[in-house]
Picture 1 (spheres, one colour):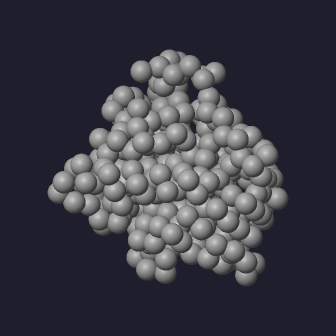
Picture 2 (cartoon, one colour; picture 1 turned 180 degrees about the vertical axis):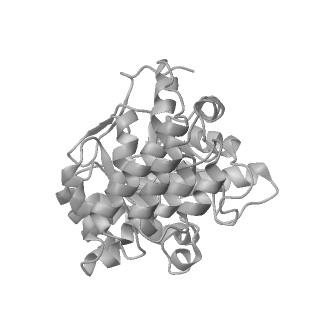
Picture 3 (cartoon, helix red, strand yellow; picture 1 turned 60 degrees about the vertical axis):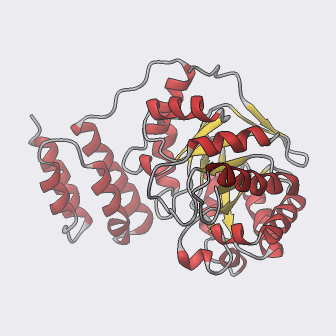
Length: 338
């Protein structure tokens, strides 16, 4: 399935229209999709819509987490700010701040399954309170001129009846649409499932048929082939890639190429992976000091895989006490490649 690269989505907003020129979106990932990670994704996917890590509206109100939105001014390409909270007024104010900082659009998180967020009424917790969810969407849409979107799930918990699950998911998503959402991203699992089991693309397809706004499919898209199959199965307007990009910031660009009918860039080999890991580590340390090593460890573990000696390298990297020693390990590994 090839999609014309000039065939984009247009989101009207409340005065500031936005065009999406790429059918692949990079999911907001807590602790992952920071400015440095987004820069790596952007190299291979210049037109893709990327997202900040999700931002707590209450924290933003208190002056915390400002860097997540303020650093947008230093970046190129479309970047959405994803917000979460359960208070409409706080979400509206956070949206205004994000718009002023240069957000391409505002995305409301109604899908995060983490218990400490859901039990306070944020993230997927809003699935259990559709009326509050609708008030939040309406408040945010009234507060900004840029488009407002929602990322959510099929429901709080599923049923054994596929038709019932589809009807419930469609009703939930229609309510978000009617409240003012101009695009939905639908993860093909319930909150109860978390990230377990297989994403239910059939239910995403059923929801897509019930909506008039664009729908982005999310869940189990980990390769260009997955993206093509997902779009064929769901009829969605695009796909969102999440955990598959951990350690693979080139994946969004590969999928974009495949959907546009361009040659798919090759997956990086051992040397390029090690160089990428080294670059990301140095950037994180430059931005965060020695604490950058702690942040980088998960990225190093994800990136340094798939080649001879990778398990031993990861083991050593996780125990390196300083950034200098971690960099030395990476240099040594690259020198020993065949």
